[in-house]
Length: 370
Image (cartoon, rainbow, N blue to C red; front, side, top):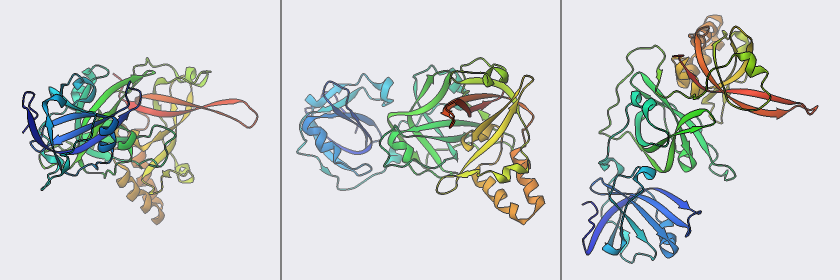
């Protein structure tokens, strides 16, 4: 049963689905998202001795505990965590009654199954926490889980009918194994705006359900490029000549066409990652003012290329059979070349051997101009 605010004691069966240590709080606190057997959810805030206990508990294993009403506190952080509950649990000391449950259950019991529709993402205010659902269109390679020096991030593409949405997985979730074609439900993602760029990213207590039996995602209606559910830019477009003459590494937005890729693409190392499941293309954008070489990663392909990386990999492998197969691969890459798109460009500054500075531009988003 769900948490009760007035019960003297109550016994709860639960799974841990997400954890995060809040080191900047006045008392360092381990925040834990738990799923109860009835499908409801709670946040647990564990400090001191309790933090040590909860830190040792593995995820996805059923536990049981008896709690007193003194541990039940009002929940005022739904807008931060996305956990829909009027109360949370707060512990300072280890719980003597906590033990493995006699029988388990899985995360598919989750009762809050509401998720935002793709055509509503544009209207969401920045900072809003929502759930997201769809089919994995491009997953990319997880970052090295042992690299603790930077906040790990990974962009995946989620398909929902004729819409696709780039989603940034942050922290531990960035290393989660995802397969193209999986249906996923992502709990608690946030719409963020930063330096002129918009993105959806997982929040501090997000978790992902893969292929839950109750999740139904509509198929794409046809083979035309998907519609992007969330535009990446909050920037006004500028001519490419302005981008080429930029002296500060700040994001830019241009309305431009991609030039056709030619057989020189076969001279590039376009497949990246240990599994070779990501693509990196050097393309040229042009408008009436100038041309600009930029890098585009496969996470941004859906609005310019119909095939996902798996399908492109099959076409690429066939290129060893002859010129017709190479032509077919190039046609797949160029299906929307020479059509005007709105490109969001993110800069990276690096130094030449002579000490001069160079800005390399990477595509952070592709949209159809309004």
